[in-house]
Image 1: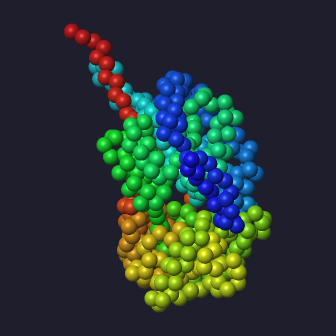
Image 2 (image 1 turned 60 degrees about the vertical axis):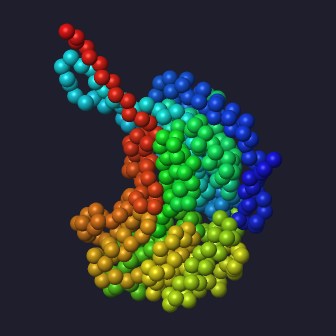
Image 3 (image 1 turned 135 degrees about the vertical axis):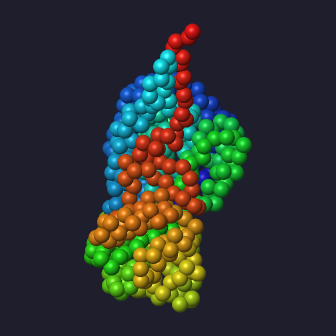
Length: 463
């Protein structure tokens, strides 16, 4: 029997392993989900909200457990683990709270002799394929609205975070969710593709790489099912001459280095007005130098290992290639003793004299490195920010609201921030353009993504 292994980046050990579901197990899980969906959808919206709210309560009670499994599975410092629980609560509570409004039938207006409305109907069985980097929040972005809207859900989590799916399953069990309404499954890439093409899935919600997104579309070809894709990012920030520099430096450093840079919306490119370039670079370098890289189980650590040695070596290669092409490094990595080739532990780095001919400025790094380029105008910054295959979020750092309002519509991104970054407001839609994918989550529109419209056109008076 094939097993999926979770290799801990902390020490390279096998932290957990689970068997890949067999064909018969897959069939039983999805048959159960399909059978349970009709009775689940028949419950009142309030009843579904109550069940899901109870599961969120159960997850909130797991803070200590969650912080530990995150540290061991994907290297997040244990001192920061509870933050993911707080984030998932904010998103989940908001999506539950707005469900009545988001799922309210639409009245197109009076028409003599007719009763008309548009409702939102559940799709059926939603298959969520979740990533490892923010494994609870990203999974629940689709799970919560899908369940509240009346769908059943099957979750496949990344190999690196196998136990997250089990934590979520335990939370729904504690909430006494009806059988087969939420289930998780362990699959490899081949069985995942076969499942998507089997006709047993009514929607796929995938968060991952561009290559993974292409595989999802290929697997779903001919099934005529929606495929939501949140893929890569190479998110830029523009620092105007009037920015509050100390505030900007603190927040950009966090946006670039938190979670070892392993966020789809982390800051990977910075364009700064030439008049404050040197000061910004010095501040970012000092912030990077101050990080404490180490074992994530140590409460004094604020920068843990990347997900695996190969991921860290990819970033090292990007940095090495940039330096060989003329870039300049501003963080002295010699003090980070754990940072060495073949190690998952990666120190922060700030690069200047970089160009868009370098991989570090064009290809998603997903690591704690940021390149900085000086610009002389808004127009130059906008052109460089848009010079990317990706388009998830972009940040403008300025004290001039009117400038941000003028620049933001010109940026090719799903979200434009002013004076913040790397944050999902659940009241706003989370989406992207270009190779970042398609579809959306969160906000009222997040419910549109997991439902279909249905029209009711009743002629009341007949002659």
